[in-house]
Amino acid sequence: MSAFRPFGQTLASGRTPLRRFLRTETGGAAVLLGATIAALVWVNVDAHSYETVWGTRLAVEIGHTGIAMDLQGWVNSGLMTFFFLVVGLEARREFDLGELRERRRSLSPLLASVGGMTIAVLVYLAFNAGRDSAHGWGVAMSTDTAFALGLLAVVAPRLSGRQRAFLLSASVVDDIIALVVIATVYSASVDAVWLACALVPLAGILVLRRLRLRNGLHVAAFGATAWICVYESGVEPVVVGLVIGLVVHAYTTPRDTLERASERFREFREQPTAELARSAAVELRAATSFNERLQQLFHPWTSYLIVPLFALANAGIAVDSGLLSDALTSPITLGIIVGYVVGKPVGYLGAAWLTTRASRGRVRAPVGWAAVAGGGTIAGVGFTVALLVAGLAFEGVELEEAKLGILLAALIASTVTWLLFRAVRLLPRSTRIRALLGSAEPLVDLAADVDVERDHIRGPHESPVTVVEYGDFECPYCGRAEPIVRELLREFTDIRYVWRHMPLSDVHPNARLAAEASEAAAAQGAFWEMHDLLLEHQDALRAPDLIGYAEQLELDVDMFEQELREHRYDGRVAEDVDSADQSGVQGTPTFFINGRRHFGAYDIETLSAAVRIAGAGALVSRRP
Image 1 (cartoon, rainbow, N blue to C red):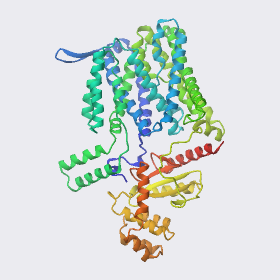
Image 2: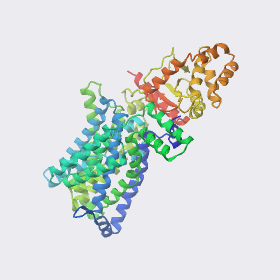
Image 3: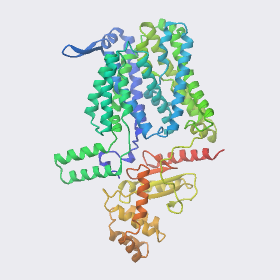
Image 4: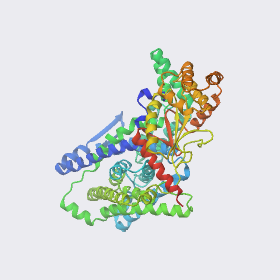
């Protein structure tokens, strides 16, 4: 059990960084859709009040200096900075710890994203060639990460985390490029002096990172200063949020940091004083990645308030027969729709195919072609950034036509994605698996491969699926997981299960000796019998209890007791602990399925689904 489980973060909760991100986006997408509908209803019922509210001027002044914008401007340029901060944080987390940590793999979603954006822009320019509206080409570029992921969960709920991660990575690249375009193409005349001044607070954030000073107030002060400087320079200031997010790196917490935090909390538990409370709080913060803390703080606000508020302020279109008839022939509307609905998937597939051919298969998408195509079709949901660019590029009737094109493209793209994955489900099983998962090898998180001569194994020694558990005999969560593992082994008779030791001695004082006792029993051919007894009696793991279990199993008690006294198997347990540290294990139980760390819940449904996906991947990898 991690030292921080009492604070509500358990492995059984299913809350991993990526899944938590996706889950928040899914719920946020529903709120975003509601806000979009509300904006459309509001402007068509009372357009005057809609324009009056969002046109209200709001100024922040100190003396004779200040910033004044209408309410829509504060939402678009101010609050949306936090949205792009979250996008940058998630991109950095994926780059440090997730699917993009193997740099070669980052090429595939990056090039797919660039391909989709390029073809979409070319399609838009083809519709608007020779017209003034051609300068609005940036509207057809970006994918709305929040909306796209949320809709993907609705239209294709059975996709694996790897497939969603591919789309997430590609859409983050979209957002980064789109913001660069906004800053360089759709900003007013740029004041180089103010822009240079913005580099100073941004450099200050880098210095804080180097000095390991991760105080949120310091970052907020530097970030606000940078935002003001960028705003005064004439560049769209939302880029500040993205830059800050990209420089806040993510990391796994070292064991010694966790142990220090556990010790400080234990001291506070024994003597609850204000001084010890402060000390424990400092250690707990230090044990959590600053990247993750900022995401946890801002992500719910951006998903459930800021982005829906942005939609409410920007999605209002006064729809009448004149607008609809004009839009059906408008090069702006048609360019956006065809660019997103056709250009995006063609660009995704074309870039992925060219990359695979050019690298002779060394660089390929971590998913199958159907998943790449589905990523391209759902990337046609360009809502948030597209509306932001539309507001900068157009005004009047042209802006209304652009907004209508963005909304219709999102609707059509979602429908096409649903039809695509519906068709994939009709394919034969082996073909369907290859179409969704592809043939790229998954990333391996397990540092030490399973050794049939050394490891303790239940099930066949040769199996397409291997489940490795790092456990602690005194950890109550391991005790709860044990009957689930048994049920898993009954359901899947062809998987092999491996137990490895990770006694958390700082919170479980008897766990290390219990692990040594299981190894002493293993020396007499009774590891699994002792394993079962120890997890069954987690509240009785002192030396006399362990000797009693040896007697119950009819072992050579004298030899067993002597080996415990001499700590004969302490080195064997230490080897497992070292491999756990190298694999990034922080708490127990931690599962690895075919070498890939299993994030999330370990109930029978979740583990069974993970085993089926691993088995499907193994089936694909064995095919020529």
